[in-house]
Amino acid sequence: MKLKVFRKDLNLKHVTMTSAGSVSVVRSVIVELEQDGVAGFGESYEDRAIHPMRADAMREKIERLVPAVRDYALADPTAFDRFIAPLFQDDAASRCAVEMAACDLWGKIFGCPLRRLWKYRGTGPFYSSFTIGQDSPERAVEKFEENSDWPIYRVELGGRSDIPLLENIRQRTDARLYVDAAGSWSLSQALDYLPHLVKLGVELIEQPLPPGRWEEAKIFKSHSPIPVYADESCLSAEDISRCVGAFDGVNLRPVKFGGLLGTRRAIAAAKAFGLKTMIGSPVETTVGASAVSQFVPVLDAFYIDGPQQIDRRIGQGVELDRGRVCFSRLNGTGVTFIKTQARMA
Image (cartoon, rainbow, N blue to C red; front, top):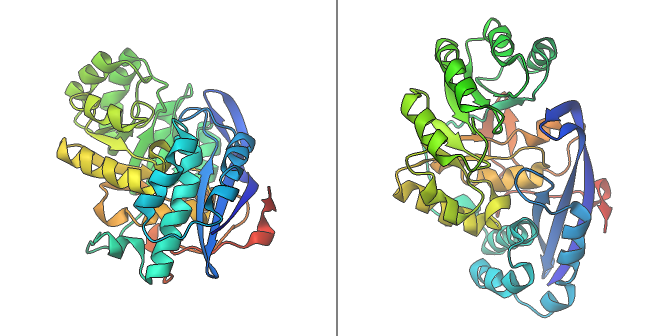
């Protein structure tokens, strides 16, 4: 196989506020694995709240695989994942991009979309939420107005005006609302907000409290009639069982679990523990979003609007028609990648 690594700086349409400050660019790493003229693609991205790896460090580590995979013939992505695992150790983010590319390549070689190979079926239609990044109530409304015809909105909170922000949006739409506090609330603040969230019709609360506060999370869950999902509190397979009793569901991003195979195992484990499942494709290209879309039929909630958050489209794959998922007709994860749109490492 031939392995190539591409580095891409994703310019956001809007500056996003996080606990670490404002963000206008997200750095992404895209991997191409080619065998017998067929190419598979995978992606990973920087996210300080989830993992410590930077794009250049991921690129450098992945490049070390080039000589190792040169004589490797992909027949089974599980065997390939075992083959590459020693290089990555605890680095799930870098492993994710390579393993995702292998899964895409396998599906293309086999001639079938991954979701069908994995027998993920659902009646559909399936709808992604649209993310409105943390901002002032006025700016949040501007972001909403740019995409005012989606059926579900996911609103990132953590500022000083969380409830007024939500009220401004609710005045303009009857759509379903999810909120993500990204661990920014204290227990008392979360409990104070809860009646307002219920009144505003919020249907899902993601990571209300900082990670590690398991007892407080259990208290909040016991008071909340709204399902509560873990994100930063669930960073590995070992965390899934800890979420029982503290959360109703878990956000199982592939970047946490080393790729799509690890995510499949995480979904099965979460369901075995009675937890709801969610996957977010935050700020990434169509490569990552198309991979996540393969899980859509078996998820309770999801957002794959990452490509809508950046200034121009990179790659072809899954499409969102006002939130409605339009699966790619291609095999594997259903993605093609235009190499001229990225700088090769």
